[in-house]
Length: 317
Ligand SMILES: Nc1nc2c(ncn2[C@@H]2O[C@H](COP(=O)(O)OP(=O)(O)O)[C@@H](O)[C@H]2O)c(=O)[nH]1
Ligand SMILES: [Mg+2]
Image (cartoon, rainbow, N blue to C red; front, side, top):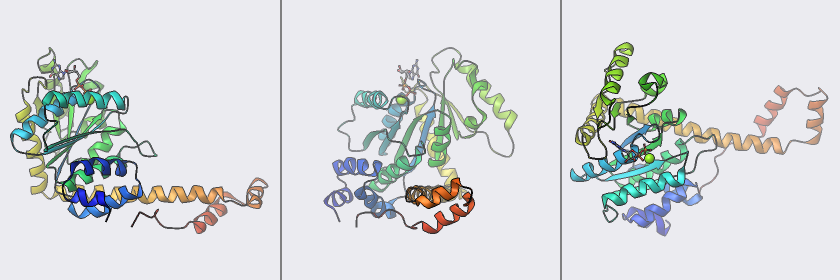
């Protein structure tokens, strides 16, 4: 076992930070770390925090960290800001410094910049979250800017998805895409100190009545992230959501769906790589035959499939 991995298992945070980079970049050592630590995962509560830019997500995360620490829970944060990864990370860093928890072993914050090949967040984030889970953090918060696809991915990744809304969102709640509302396990109406917050809450309630079916409407929590108002209630709601998932067996169901999706994604990625490779090795005669209408694409596709070397890229052993 590599030295880094030994240190990780011994609870060394610097080893954790370095291995997270390996996992993010999917180096052989990162892949090895994922495999090695996998049996230790499945304990942490994964919490997705999403919503439009400027809604106060980072401030909210900082406030949640403070509350969680007060309750003796350890917290790791992965902050993703696709529009501005660097400043996004820096802003989060500022908030954390503000908290004065940089020397607190129970808090770990990291910004994530890399994206999967298909533009998706999930592969890197999922693997990084797993490493943090194995390391033993109680709560893992994933902060992402609400940008359509990312929201949905986060919801798939998280046990509990918190959608942060604020007053003054143009057309308000109506402007949100239907899919965005559906992913929320908990709604937060942040900046409750500003005019219009009450209206957002009322709009949400109306919306929930309209779509209400068998499902219980998601709780709505008003917060002022800058002062900490409503944060205790929010954390209580988050913890309660997971407790309910566990009690009804839906937690295991979600986890299984997530892990299958991850396996599918990894297999698909490897297949794509090898398919591209096989296409690159295409013989000149075949290219010519294709153009001359002597070889049809379907037959070529069959040949390509036969030429695939069906295995995942090897990890360091
Ligand atoms: N008035 C008010 N401002 C807030 C509140 N929460 C956050 N802000 C401010 O909103 C701005 C954006 O916050 P930030 O956490 O960076 O938003 P993010 O882009 O969603 O992460 C900052 O200037 C915060 O100080 C709140 O509850 N009330
Ligand atoms: Mg932010």
